[in-house]
Length: 381
Ligand SMILES: *Cc1c(COP(=O)(O)O)cnc(C)c1O
Image 1 (cartoon, rainbow, N blue to C red):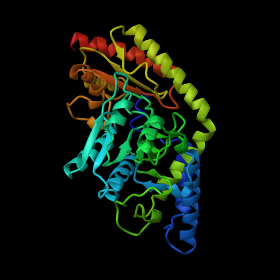
Image 2 (cartoon, protein in one colour):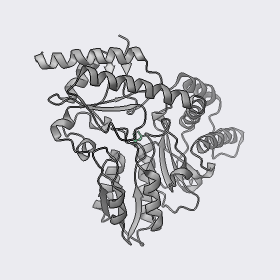
Image 3 (spheres, protein in one colour):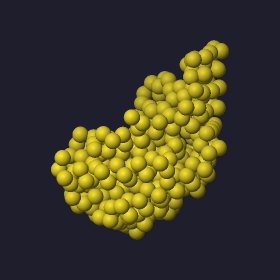
Image 4 (tube, rainbow, N blue to C red):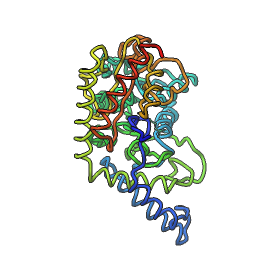
């Protein structure tokens, strides 16, 4: 059976051109970039060329990019690194109530270590309350972390304004831009961020590679001890095949950017129009908020999202109930509850996240299959 993949916010299928390029390079260029001999220096050249490409895409300087094992590690390094270096100045951190699990858990970890965290709420559209953010800043605040695009809702946060609020008080600002990269402009100077996390596998490259942007002059304590790689900000031999995949995916994105974003927007418009026409009782979450162009969160009151997901899967379609990390757990999404959904409504929600290669036919097939799944569940068979 031909599969339809509508879970691109969980991960994307690596672009065939990315895989090809990495195969060509990784076989021949295998040296350790820290070695002084020819093999090492060849690897070093590729590493630095990749760093330059990735830096350029987000408007950064190459030496402001630190490679990590992904978005999760970049988020951990940013938050724990700042918390540690400023532990004398203060122990108060601020973040939103709808951050990715890796941001949420890192803050909870620091709470257990004695740090104080203000969790800033969002409105019904999933947009952070900037006034409350400003009012919650204290003399002992050391970091504000707000994501750019939410992975469950697609909502875009007013990061530039939030960063200005933090900077007025001399406080660092971190942004989790993992879900935004590849779907909207992501430029560190326009956003005004000091630290920013990105990840390769959300943009058609390999899993297990990401980066933290660290603005020149920003202080942070390394969280990995070892061979002083990445200018001593993240020890460990660099994942060169992963980094090559990341750079190649960015290069392809640069060529296809406008077309990709337009295609996804039109496809999502078709999807949401179809959902509303066919299923009058369904509700699209954060529909009126500014959103990245590929994500739809839709609630089916009275239905269980997981059962819907499994029925769709049996018909060849991959969607999500919200967060990939929740697999096997029964606790409904904290993100959906933060925008005012009840536990039951949250439980009956599907996330459909489109990718660059999805088609009109796939959306038609999905709408049809969804109708059948809802009927089947209602009949109770
Ligand atoms: C996927 C994701 C992450 C985690 O990135 P990994 O590379 O999978 O560790 C972090 N934040 C957001 C918003 C994400 O969507």
